Every structure is written in C-alpha cells, then in structure tokens.
Image 1 (cartoon, rainbow, N blue to C red):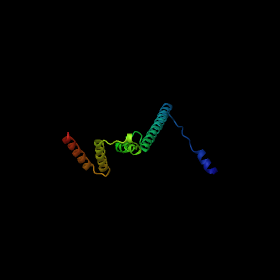
Image 2: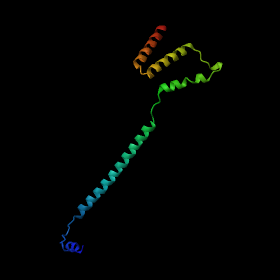
Image 3: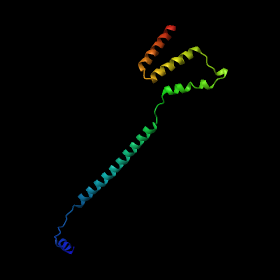
Image 4: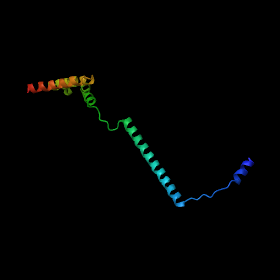
Length: 128
C-alpha cells in the first residue's frame, strides 16, 4: 500500500485552470434546470392524480335518464290510497309505450325502438 501512495505522491500535478464565470453560469443553469424539472414533475403528477380521482369517482358524469325515469315511477306502487291513484288512460298508455321503448333499448334493439317511437308519433298525429 505504501508503494502505491509513493507513486501517487511522485506524480506531477498539473495546475487546473478554471474560468470562474463560466463555471458559475453553468452551475446556475443546472440549478435552474433542476428546479424547473422538479416543478414540471410535481405539476404533472398532481394532474395525473386528479385525472385518476375524477375517473374513479366519475365526478360530473351525467345520470342516465332511463334510470331516473324508472325510479320515479315506483312511487305509485307505494301510494295505494284512493286519492293518489292515477287512472288517466292516456298517461297509462304513454307509460306503457315508454316502458316498451326503454325495454327495447336495454335489450340492444335501438333501431326497433326508434321505429316503434316513429309509429307512435304517426298514430298520435292520425288521432288528432
């Protein structure tokens, strides 16, 4: 070990000439670049987290009108006294047609439901 140390000590050392201004400008540039990269990483990670949070919770997603319609019709099942019974035949027929169209849409028969609704419109115009 001592021989290696002697060889190292005997080596000629050259003087290192450095330009202080150039060194400081490069150092400041790297520090600013590091800060900018850190800010970009933080901002992008926050954006990804927010997107994931909104995706998981589906914040702002519209409710399906089909579910709202079907849920609102259950209140007639609960209210059974005489004064709350709704026996209007036109509304009953319209409710039946709507339920039939919703059923066809749920089963995947979109075009058949559209044709059915068109036929209902034609029948409604003929009766007027």
